[in-house]
Amino acid sequence: MAILAFLGEQPAHGFALKQRYDTLLGHGRELRSGQVYSTLARLERDGLARGLEVERGEGPDRRVYAITDDGVTELDHWLATPHSPGARASELFTKVVLSLVAGRDAGTFLDAQRATYLARMRELTAARHDGDVVDRLARDYEMAHLEADLRWVEVATARMGEVAARIGAQR
Image (cartoon, rainbow, N blue to C red; front, side, top):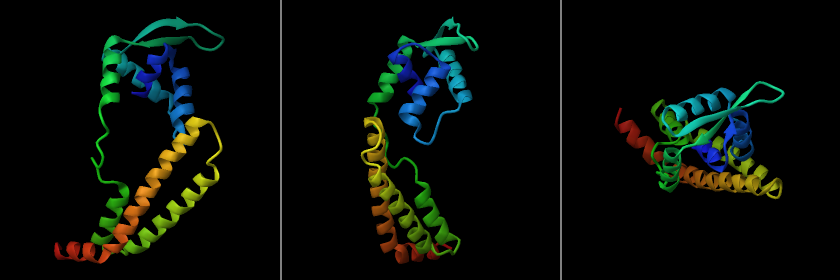
């Protein structure tokens, strides 16, 4: 959907799309070039984007892509559809349950997780004024998620005995 949104701004070639993604959404998870081109091929196959002209430059020729009317419709639908919270259990939840199933000390794991979250929150707080508005917004988003996960760690810690008893009773 990011590629479609970028094509909705203006037609572009794969390298420009990768740079746009990395600048706005990458934040430590840069997009691989191969993923951009396979996504463009899939979008073109599905009629959501179309290849236009080939842009010639100093380097290799670059095919320019544009979003189609069907692509605009698909993007608009995706953007208007609310994200489904809690659709899948997180790795954090899974590790706590599996620690108990395996007879391990989930409390030790939760303590380590709490320390990791607090350290990351300190880093984000120290950098709160760094970067442009998109960088700051990304940090705000991460901070909100860390705060929510930290609250869950506290709840899980408080319920550990009860959860362990339930899991033990199911053996």
